Length: 422
Image (cartoon, rainbow, N blue to C red; front, side, top):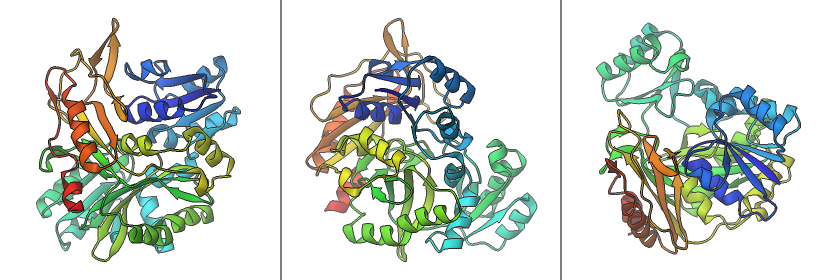
């Protein structure tokens, strides 16, 4: 089989390495891929959002199955376009990907079907939103409606910050058309949990839970990023909470999408807050999370390609999806200055990986046969071990063997999870 994977980050590298475990896989194509992915796939410089370019590619290359992982091409309808030319895909169609593509849509869906989430109001006019904020409690959460590279959420500590956020998003269009509408939500408290799930539109099979670390600096300080590291499983996500989430959130969400004529087939990501009043949805994603995927897939015992095919065919069974006992930790090694300005083009030296260790390359390119930095999050160093303590220790040991100029990483990935286990 020839597999096409759309995307070019650490998440895609993890997906490709997992897919290659299937003995029937002959060639993996990655569009656009990156310098590290090129060790595991044939990379072509076609952007994930270049739908015409992708369709032109599949006309000249035999592709038996495609995996569309990033949010942008899913929301743009790449799965629809590929399916229309006869290529089976893993990933939701455009009318289902709206669950991430529009926060207003997903909030309205949750309100309509009684799925637990933060109280909120929607606004299409900046002055009306600012007037509403004058009588709001703080902190308050301001969200741009559409995709914004994971940066469209602002937690305002007071009215002045909230007003500025509204003007930035709605008037100055810092996130472009994504800010034409906004949500103002109540601020929830409690441990955060990420749960990725496979669903064929009928059956929902959650993957192992994880804990992301969004802030740039140790101690949860600094700016929000795309994620500086993850651990799995998340110790706050108990069997009792998992059962409640399945009954009150996961199945009701899939059933709600079916009732709306938007059957979701693919990876549905639930971003949850375990509040004093029970689990609530913070956000949905219509795809694998990054860097959550980098700790979830190393714990997957089952064949990823077979699961993806079952999702596409509508034959998914919980028996098909098995995870190892144990834990995994991913430490992101980033370019100094990320998530703001940083320099690229520095040669990267990589350590040797042992059993249960992975280097998932994200922001790097091949330059005359050498790997050099080409992004903010350069790579994720991952270790899967019997215990979380060992996974954290060995992920850091691996990360410390990575060398490039101005490299930096957080020093406390997994610390909260380890404290919770005590």
